[in-house]
Image (tube, protein in one colour):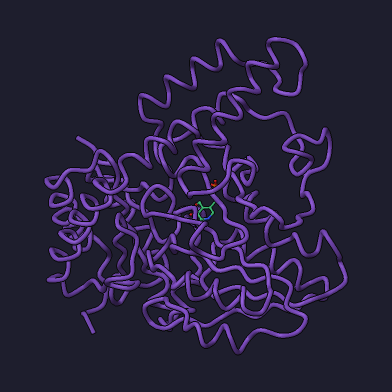
Amino acid sequence: MSTYLDYSATTSMRPEVLERFTAVAQEQWGNAASLHQWGNRAALVLERSRQQVAALIQAEPEAIAFSSGGTESDNWAILSPYLADPRPGHLIISAVEHSAIARPAAWLEQRGWQVTRLPVDRSGRIQPADLASAVRPDTRLISVIWGQSEVGTIQPIAELAAIAREHGILFHTDAVQVAGRLPIDVQRLPIDLLSLSSHKLYGPQGVGALYIRPGVELAPLLQGGNQESGLRSGTPPIAAIAAFGEAAQLAAAELPHETARLQSLRDRLIAVLATEPRLRLTGDPIQRLPHHASFIARGGTTGTSQQLVRAMNRLGFGISGGSACNSGRSQPSPVLLAMGYSPQEALAGIRFSLGRSTQLAEVEAAAIALRSALHSLPQASLLSPA
Ligand SMILES: Cc1ncc(COP(=O)(O)O)c(C=O)c1O
């Protein structure tokens, strides 16, 4: 028996989504820009999907630009001030961004831009007052991750976005981990740009979207055939976009029930592992993603995170060491370091992320397995609990 508990890394297409993917790939696979019937059929699919994705976040369909995923949407948003005017300016991000924001921000820094990284507390939360005092006359964009992928912490996005709006600064959020798991309403929140990724919500990999508030002028990241109203060139992968739309619609319909279910499974996992002296919960205990539980193994050293992931794999459980995108590394997690953990502690992060198929018995079995995985670690890599 094997149990996948890494739904923050990726999810498999649910049957309805796969069915839609296949149907469109077989029957409506045209180039949506073509003027013949094949093109027209694909264009209809594209617009239906745009409506479905828009509805997930309460947006107008024309505010959705399809992209190749969360990474592209994040890069596009953070680079957009530079694309519009490359003369150096100031950006504000958080110290706990996904690398799809952190890396392009560092790239801009190498080109003379100034980047303020808002500090976080031990739970990974930003103080809105810190954002207010970081704003400068030359601040061109503020980008803060909504739900942190590695430690699950949810930021006070409404307050942060309100500060940005007050100062007339563009506000972007990476909502890749939040979409389909918590309600998002861009009508009520002053968010200008928001990144989505299909494969985190049971859609296919390689497709995502950037929400662009109507009226916000955004320079394209990719130029070519002027698809997506000239904002994002490239022939739309019509079957993947159709499947993303279907996944978004199903996620929206099931969200209230599924969020509550995941939250109770997550709370059970955290409660069972709270009695394990060699573990410490990371991230905010309350303001956290509903499907997410993350820990550090106390007294860990280089490789502890990977050793635990491998030991869990041998026991039949798929979990992740911190962020999947960076797994395989033996560097301390920058996110845990920013939260005030020591370099040694930041080498020992692990993450469980639950999903649609997860059942209570699996969560309880995973907790038992983790205890035995902790036992299996070389003694040198796990000192007595502090
Ligand atoms: C918070 C966050 N942002 C961005 C991404 C990148 O998304 P994609 O895999 O669709 O490029 C991920 C994926 O791990 C993520 O968790």
